[in-house]
Image 1 (cartoon, rainbow, N blue to C red):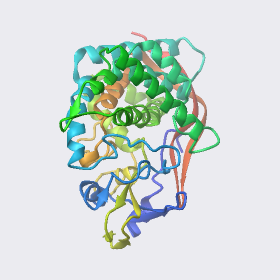
Image 2 (image 1 turned 180 degrees about the vertical axis):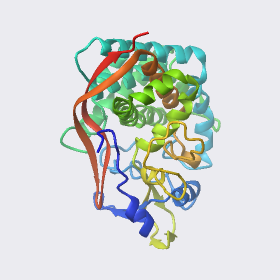
Image 3 (image 1 turned 120 degrees about the vertical axis):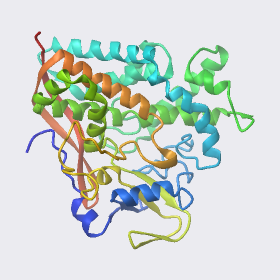
Image 4 (image 1 turned 120 degrees about the horizontal axis):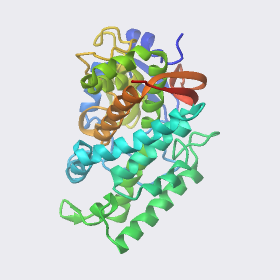
Length: 387
């Protein structure tokens, strides 16, 4: 099996039952596996809410490490709309040419540096640095701030030995509190300042609400982007012909990004809490119990995708849910799409081959399912393209 392959560990359960089960800190989860069912449940926010106790819809649950509600992620309509209307324009800035130019400069610097090395550990030396430096563009704050974030590692809530590290999470919370206070004293052009100057439904945002937006911004797009970047590099390492195809057809890069997101599904699933007794795939779901929308399983649904376990870079019909679906679709999707688009375009321009020298897979344990989501380490030799 190729190193870059991510097997579909949900296939048998998806076809036979439509659901799976996972235990999580004495708060079990019913996993919804088929694309049609995932989309249906995601759309039905009245029955399957996001606005439950802060941290409960995340899997593994974060209720023991935070009390702040992530906004707008953990807010349901109608309140959700006010927050989303406020911040959506900010998160659409990646469509602007200046924003894209800044991302390209960051990406080209990392690729050029990698081409000069004998070997690069892609997770920490490439993907984490790219994610953190690109975040300064999204927040519109000084580039130098990214050096601090790089030191936090690939996840802000998890450590090497635990999925939920309260001490590590507190570092992020304290940092955001300090940045809000600093910006309040000297307003700038950052996302912090936008939030401090704004109202939702006629009320100024509280510090807790601002903190909720910022925690989501820092945490929501960290390990997911790192997984997407690392998996993409692993794929092109084993499929140099695909890199050549992109070099010869740069216009297909946007379509290729959607396929890479579908296949690799950087986030396995996200939870919801039932507001009433109901059913999913003819299985009973009790009120105040959790389901999860399993994006990774839905994106391999053989009833929807032809050859679902193959990467087809020019896939024409691709209704994937790699960025979520419905009211709570991914706030940072535009940023992630532009980052990956520029990344694979620059790799195709600058790199002829990438050779995997060693790797350590990152395998998530979801009860009956073990899913490879990416890598704990991936050492790669980059070779420059010659013209």
